[in-house]
Amino acid sequence: MTLRVRVALAVLAMLHGAILFAGWLAPYDYDQQHREFSYSAPALTARAPEGITANCRVEWFRAGRLFGTESPCGIFLLGTDAFGRDVFSRVLYGGRISVLAGLIATLLALGFGTAAGAIAGFYGGWADRILMRGGELLLALPWLYLLLAVRAVLPLHIPTTQAFLLVAGIIGALGWVRPARLIRSVVLSVRERGYVQAARGFGASGPYLIRRHILPETVGVALTQATVLIPQFILAEVTLSFLGLGISEPVPSWGNMLMEARQYFALVSHGWLLAPGLLLVPLLFGYFVLADGLLAAQGIAQSPAPDALNYSHDHGR
Image 1 (cartoon, helix red, strand yellow):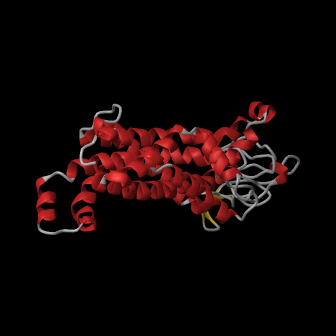
Image 2: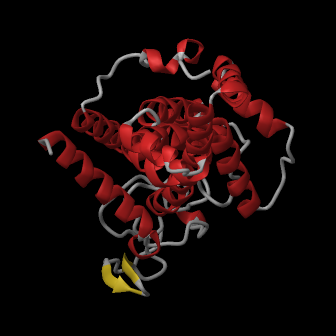
Image 3: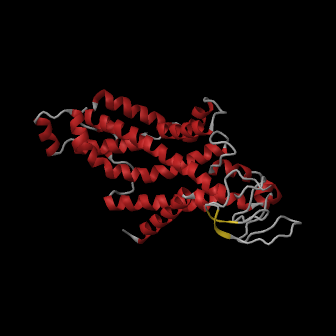
């Protein structure tokens, strides 16, 4: 394992750990307002509202949280928004939404992609043509506009839980094509190996061969694809929420938190509102470095898809 991969794993572990334990690390709930601290600048110390004299100090392990302070004082490491809500707390809670959406969408995409790729590669024929032609059609469509079109035809004002599952489902359902094509290329190779042919000669059924001999060979490709898809799907959720088609207020996601920063006066005067976008940088970088390391470990060149992906030239049709 190279140093770059180790650093990427450390960064990812730290970020995911902070998001997972948001309820303990965040000093406030995501919707708790402090109107007297509207657009308060970031600070590492506790402070009192303007015009109020108070002995403000940070208290560790307070009220079931890592740190906090006694009212009317407040501590805002990354400042506050227009409603006086702590940006640091909202970034942690919002990360739960954005990252979990990316993880769920990746599981859906890999699940459907693995099934489609295994069927297309093992059976060939009409199943291969239908699945791969349909996949090529999806790949030819603009990704962002396709997401917007699918989301726009669905109800806009729905409960938060349904909106979250809907966004994750849409992203995952539209992201299965690339993993399916890669899984298919592996299946095309594995199905011709001697032990698979021997099992077939002994009367093993197609589903048994796929489950017992072929799918285990696709695990490495699936893991590598997961490290590529997760950051892409996180960005997809952020984009939808930023455009008002994903998770809505007051529940935070990194996308709807960035909506406030799109206003010029807010961006110029209150730059800390960009905190969710800045946090995306190390998160995405970590996943991409990890994907690069997995590709190197598998000896896969980072180049266009091999000829096996061009199913019009595959044998066994």
